[in-house]
Image 1 (cartoon, rainbow, N blue to C red):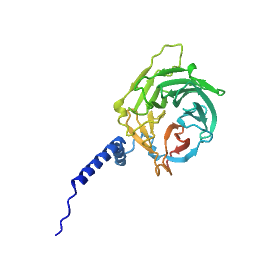
Image 2 (cartoon, rainbow, N blue to C red):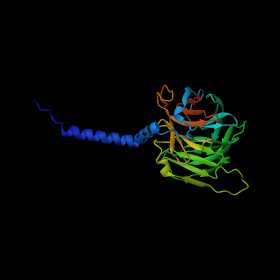
Image 3 (cartoon, one colour):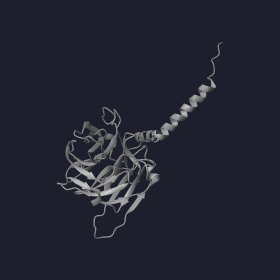
Image 4 (cartoon, helix red, strand yellow):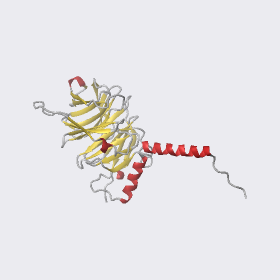
Length: 305
């Protein structure tokens, strides 16, 4: 009887190395935590408090935002104007968009360095981030404003984890709690909670408190943060990851509740969202998304029967 040859030691060693590499890649991409979450949601009843991101479907996919030479970054919804705002960081501009992705106006940003995010605070008031210097800049934008100079604006710097190009990528604001959430992209990936900025009454003294929770943030099974959105109704935070092609819903304790995948074949998408940069949500719960190179998306949750 002919004996089968045993695998050579070299093949065994290469197989072990390949397995270790796959495990390392899976760990880096947080695939195991993501798979466990997806498996857990199969038998765990969906929380009544959850927004149910997995139910959302794309209704406008990859529409080009015409008329822009530079890539846009970030997105916020203005409930007063019922429009969206984004920024460009090469030739710095603030861009107002309609809810179907058309440019309504452009405002030059002077002295803002590397603007990466914008967030609506109240009527005519916004906060813009400067990623390179980790500045938060409060601006006023009236109907006739044609440019905004950072030198004339109230601003603050969060001088932690300085260096590189992995700074502030996202903002979200809790108008009731007067909290500004600031996302640091990665290395390390963190969400700061800023209280006391922006300041609303110049006649009163104030102090600024910056809080972060690395243990909570480590529970997010994504590899980077691109944008944030705060839902006033539930008190939950939406975190957008470009690299992981995912939107996560986090409860008040930072626990993941639901996800919206930005991959081909999910949520009705015909193609992958190439590089998601900004997320916003209107009063009806419609989710708007921008992706490089200047693509516009709209997701809606179907009405319940």
